[in-house]
Image (tube, rainbow, N blue to C red; front, side, top):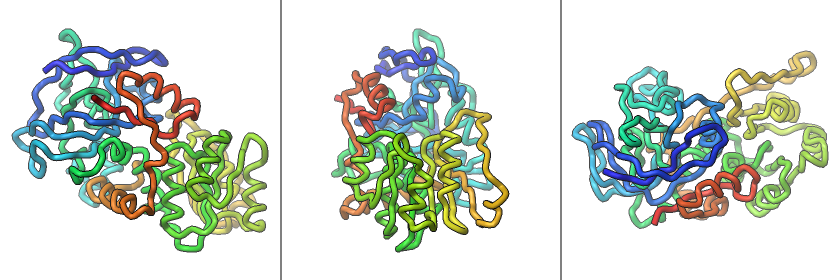
Length: 367
C-alpha cells in the first residue's frame, strides 16, 4: 500500500512529505487509518538525533485513528474500532508482568530502535528501509502498522483529534501526578515547565485536590494559560528567582511535591531546592543521554527529600487512558484546552510553534 508520511531525514531539517510503501501488518500488528496525531518534544529530540533512532525515520507517537486490518495473532480489536495509540512494550518481562510496562526491559529497543523485533521495518522508500515503527506506531503517516500492545480502544462517538495526545504527553504529565506522586487533597505542588506535559500535571494536581498549585515557566503565554487552567500562582523564572518565590508563596515551608518537565539540569536543581521537608520531586523532562545534575547534600540531607524519575506517567495505557477520558467528560480534566490543530501538511509549522511556545500541544489532523 502507498501512504503519505512525514520523513525525518537529517538533524534539525524539516520533515519531508513522501509517498512510502507500507507492508501488510505483521501477525501482532494492526493497520490503523490515522485521524490525528500529536506532536511531542520527543519527536523533535529524535529528529535532531539527541536520541539515536536511525534516520530516515517516520516519527509520531500520539496517534488516534480507526482500525482497518488486524494481524493473525491480534485479539481484542477488530476493523472499525476507534483507538488511541500509546507506547510499546514486550508484555513478557518481569516489569511488564508486574504492571509496569513503561519500565519494560526492552522499552528503548521497541520504541526507539527503528525496527520490529525481527529486524524488519514496515515502511520502504523506493525499496530502501525507513525506520519504523516508532513507539510501535510511527503515526506521522496516513496509515500505520501498529503494535497491538500500543492500542487503547475508545468510544467511537468521541473526537479522535482531541484524544490523540492522551497516548504520551498528557498521559505522562497526568500519570506523574495521579500514579506516582499521588498528592493528597490539601497539599502543595509546583510544576517547573508548563508545556503539554507540565500543563497536564497541573490539571491532574487540581483534580487531585491540591490547594496550592504553582506553575513555573519563562514564557508568559504559558503562564497565562496556567492561570486560565486554575493554577493558584504563577512564577516567571525569567524575571525572578523561582526558588525564593516558591518559598515566599508557601510561607517559607516549600512545596510538598514538585515536577520537573523541562529536561534542564538547572531547573531540576531549582525544583529540588523548592521542596518542603520530606518533599518529593518527580522528573519527566527528557534530557540528552549523559546529562548530569548536581544537588546540595549538606543541609539538604536533613530535609529527607525524594527524587523520582518517571517514564510515561507510570501508566498502563489501556487502563489509564480511559480514566483520563472519563475525567475529561466530567469536566474535571480539561486537557483539550491545551490543543492547537494543524492539517498534516503543516507539520513543520506545528514543530516550530511547539518549540517557540506558540502552541502547547499541536495536533495534526488528517483529511
